[in-house]
Length: 248
Image (cartoon, rainbow, N blue to C red):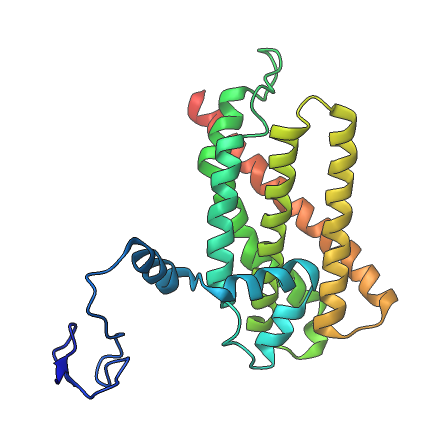
């Protein structure tokens, strides 16, 4: 018996799984919760087996996803921008719920206040990181402009690097907030470990993508990290000053 596509009405041949006209998968079922979630996450985040094929090399193989993308191997992994959006949403949710700065109120005469910090976390932290995304790509571009790679290459690098950074920071926030909140000495060492992971990951990523000698990469890592830190602090201070002027 010939059946029609539920989406466009096109007649389906026997054995057709997908409609030849609109591409929708043929199903007699009204749908399940699982199918609904797969459709949603698949459309917006390609949240299927690709998530595992993308996250594992993202964390364990610095620069691998960027190299694969630039070499044209893109179907097996989540596109860089979707991966960044997906991970950044999780990071900002974790950061807002956990708020590692909570309870850090100093005396009333101090410039910083808990209200100011909360305002920064709720309204400006995500803007700071979104601003740093293209700025970081531009920094990489300046340090590697002799490689004759276009800006898109550096932007893809920035997307993958920040995706890893969000995973790293999310892990740090969760551990220090819920597991080791009162272990101040341990948390200080953990912060040092996170900083070293940042530097080591950047070094390995740059080496993988731009294939440069170790000494040059080390010097560039120092310069890039310092510039990135300055940009982060500057943009954060500007955001906090905005709050200060709004309240004054």
